[in-house]
Length: 416
Ligand code: EPZ
Picture 1: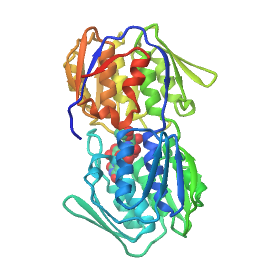
Picture 2: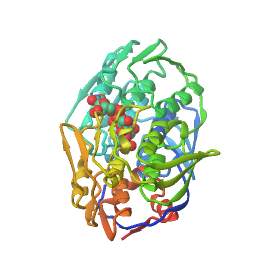
Picture 3: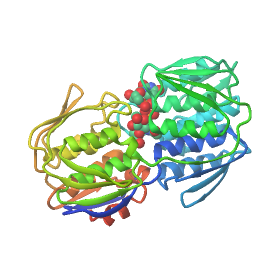
Picture 4: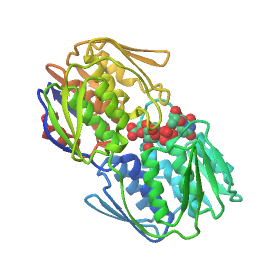
C-alpha cells in the first residue's frame, strides 16, 4: 500500500446528525469467496465499497471469475477458476486467505502467495494449514507462497486450540463440497461466521450448530444464491465511541446491527456514554463524564478486539485510571506510541494496557492499521488544536466513505 495521505483533524465540538452503517468487511470477504464454490451466478447485496473488498474482487477476476459491481451489489460467476493465485494484492489483505478454502473446495491443487494483514501482532495461519492437512491435503510452505495438493479428502473432526474466525471460515468453505460430515470443534461463532453459514445453507450445504461445534455436510454441486451481507458491528461500534467521547452530541446511527452490539453498548454505558435505541436506530448523546473501566477483551459475544484501540483513546478522558487486556491480539499496541506523542499517560505491562487520565495535545502522528487510523481520528477530534495523521490510507481499507460520514456529523477532518 502506498502511504501518502495525511488527514488534518481539529477539535470537534458537538457532533450531530445521521450516520449510516455499511455492510461488514469481515463478512463480505468470506461471502465473496463462497461465491467461488459454485459455477452458478451469485448475487451479493450490501457489499461495502472499501479497499480490502475491492482488492479481493480484483484478485478473483484475475482467477478468471466474472465479477460485476454496481453500488453495493456484486454479481459473481466462477465458471472458470484458476488455481495459481500469485497476484501481489494477495499480500495486502488478510481476507485473501479465504481463497485457499474456496478454491480447494472445487480444485485439487492451489499455489497462493501468503496473505497479508494489519500489523497488530503476528498473524499466523498454522490453524488453517493444519486443518487442510487433516482434511486430506498436502501443504508445502515455500519462501513466499504456499503450495497445496489434494491427497485423499478425509472427512473428520477439526479441533482448533483457540477460537479463530479465519480458520473456522476456511474449513466451512473447504468442507462445503465434502460429501461426508466434517465437524469443527471450538469454532468461532462470530456474526460474520453466521452470515456465511446462512449463505452456504442457501447454496445447498447442510450445517448444524451445536454447543461449541459446527457439523457440515457438503454437496458436490452447489446452487447459485442471492445473499445480503450483515451490517458492520465494528464500524457501528467505532461511531458509538467517537460520538460518545464528545459531550452534548446527538447522532443517529442507522443500520447498526444492535443484536451484535450488546456488549459494546453495555461497556459504553458503563463508561458514562449515553446510548439508547429509538425504534431501530441507535442514538448516542455524548457522555455525562467518562468513567474508568477495567476491560477484558474476548471472542464474540464479549468485547471485540477491533474496538480496543478506539476505546483506549476515549478512556484518556476518564477521571481515574483504566486497564484493558486483549488476549486475542496482545501486541495490538502500536497506537500507544502515537498517543504518547499527544501526551497520553498510557503504557502496556504484562499484556495489560494502563490508561491514566490526561488532556491530549495535538501532534503529528502515524496510523499503523485500519482500526488505529479511526482511533487517532477520535484522538484528534477530542483534542484542542489541530492534529495531523499520516498513513491515513489504512482507514479506507475497512471503513466506507469515512471522510464523508465523519464530516456529515461535524467531525473537523480534511485530507491534505
Ligand atoms: C479476523 O482476523 C479479522 N480479520 C480481524 O479483524 C479480527 O480482529 C479477528 O478475526 C478477531 O476477531 C478478518 O476477518 C479479515 P483469528 P483473523 O483467526 O482471522 C490466533 C480488522 O480490523 N491464530 O480469529 O486473523 C491469532 O493470532 C481485523 O477488521 C493462530 O494462532 O483472527 C489470534 O490470537 C483485524 N493461528 C487468535 O488466533 C491461526 O492460524 C484469533 O485470530 C489463526 C489464528
